[in-house]
Image: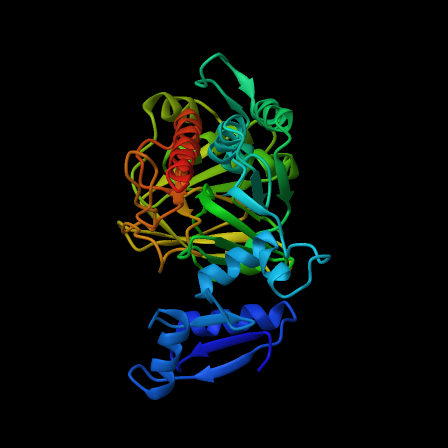
Amino acid sequence: MGDITVYSTQGCPFCSRAKSFLRDNGISFEEIEVQPGSREWRKMQEKTGSGSLPQILVKGKPLGGYSDLVSLAATGELNERLGLEKKEAISPLYDVIILGAGPAGLCAAVYAARKLLKTLIISKDIGGQVAWTYDIENYLGFSQIDTADLIKKFDEHVEKYGVEKIIGTEVSALEMSGKIKRVTTGMGKTYFGKTVIIATGKRPRPINVPGEKALIGRGVSYCSTCDAPLFAEADVAVIGGGNSALEAVIDLVKVAGKVYLVSLTPLTGDLVLQDKVKSYPNVEILTEYDTTRVIGSSVVEGIEIKSLKTDEARSLNVEGIIIEIGLLPNSNQVIDVLETNRQGEIVVDNRCRTGMAGVFACGDVTDVPFKQVIVAAGEGAKAALAAYDYLINQR
């Protein structure tokens, strides 16, 4: 018999995860398949004191199940039990791993660090959705501030506490059901945490018409702040009728030739923004028009729209399209694991708890109303404090 024995049964997901974990980390083991109630299963019960599967033994001594295996590996204790004291732990064990580095995630990091929690941020970028806007006029303490400056201040505040960050990668796998959470990035590195805070925000909603996907970055954009300068003196269409679409028009009129505002419905944005947009001589507003196709082979050459009132089809010769029809929550990794609402937002209570022990969520990815920077930051603080309370009650 080898150093590690795994009692498992077919169809058991945690048995499969335990075996995969051992293989991925180059740890050999002996597997004994059992059926509940069988002779081998009763032997397992006698050795381990448990009838749940999997059961793992190290040098004949019970270790526990999959969660216990990951926990011991993360702290380095598994190596010690195997007589590999000189080998480092597979990964540091963090008190909290924060997914996302927008206002919610960064604020959560500050509060976690101030509670002396070992904290890791994993995010594809810094700033999140805030980076998509030009300036902010309603963040307490700043009557007006450039978003790049605000993000820089957020990041500098986090840096003050020495929080570890991994920026430029997304999460490819997430296991949260055990005591120790396992986060794997797109770069193939795995990290372990006692708690996870999901602060992944939202992403632009596509219009899902022919030509759109193929021409992303070639005239199709979802961020006027980012890409408006690219359309200097060009004719551009903005798709949408809410505040974000109206703000995109305001961004574009400064640089573009003509701007078409195409909306499926009557305009729904704030009246003050509607009035401002209507005052521009180089803006044409087309309400109750459906966008049916993006025209172009290698770059955008136009769009086709259709009137909902008359069925009249029309082509607009534009070189750029800014799509502003709302956002989708970045909850794909947890949609089948955590409770979500019809919009895909993670359902949380007033302490940012998700219903799964040790897993919290905050910011725009949740069902908390009023998607604002200051609200997201406040929710991030709550999530970190709730994670701290969870941790101290586990000891």
